[in-house]
Image (cartoon, rainbow, N blue to C red; front, side, top):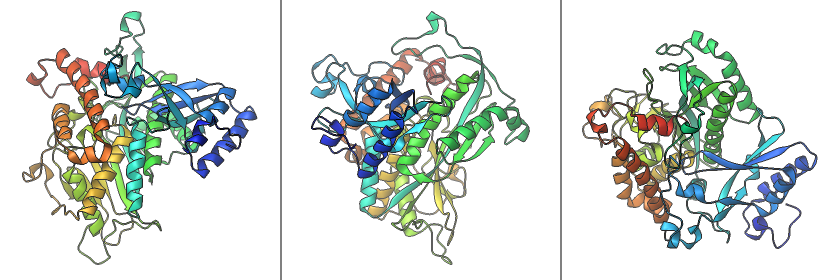
Length: 498
């Protein structure tokens, strides 16, 4: 900002680029002109959901200089708001004096993310990053982790680009379950709403079914455009009210920010229309099949050229860089599962012949493979689609683990081996974890991700997952007797919040 003093947190700690300072000045001009009644300042929590405060204009102008005090409590909560780390102990159960007693941290807004929310005119929105009071990045903020691996890739002269492809469900609310006894508590999420489907299931890509929800689809498309989200397509999927949206390519940070805001937007707009949106992988409702989040990805050089393109006339599906990138994804796939599939429920997808991968494989335009290579020699659109993720994944960790693993494959010149024609029968390929418990064990043993994200971050995340798993096993001690059935605990844990 042009107005600064020694007290200004952002200037004092040099937390913005010149581009961000210029954007902040432009935002301040609009706020002073009374274009906004309120501004929401938000941050992505450990699960990738948005938490924030709503500020009045004068308070927001101060925040553009001094940032915003923001509770650290979210970093103590697991997926069901259970307190996984007792803050009222020495070191806050994390061996960090900075986390004792539920202290305030500092939320620094990123002016490049500023938007006006189209479903609530006069409301601004901005996303930010968390810092300690000495200007040090909070080690639990996943957006910082993604920016770090982006920088590692940039040091090698490469840029990651991603295209989002996400599935989710829309249902119609019959009973919102708002009685006091349905409100939940810490570690016990509120009762999920009673819903009905918005249409019949298993009419894949039905135009008739899409027409029946045209008002909803048209509204989302309009709002996405106003928010600068590069929405490409909307289509009917298999389950009743299951949709798939795809987005054009963006840089890594932009794509993660898009996914974060998109999920929140869909849930907010749906609620205003008497609908309920969920990004839970497999809702505990009859006939509701699992949803996935497929991540299309490639690398470019400084001039924007696609580095995955094999030479025209060659017999290679991808360039040597592309092949090594894939090899890195395959090598670290098991350990990355907590990042790509962070919920107990997400592992409902990992079954043979389910259109989701059960092994660390790659194939040529093969939807059974984990990494589906698309394109070919000389094709400028050549890229990889990783089909392993679930829609609830924290976008910053999903994209971050892909960049880190792929870059490791490039640095070590790894080779992915031949493509698989029948990935489900590839017995020589590693089987992916089929439960969150197995995934946690894989991450515990991964020195690579400890080196990438830091021991503090990995041990903290494992602690959150241990809390989530512990509550699941306590509530559903006999779940293994019917391992394919979605439990009541899962539906209550994820259907509303995700």
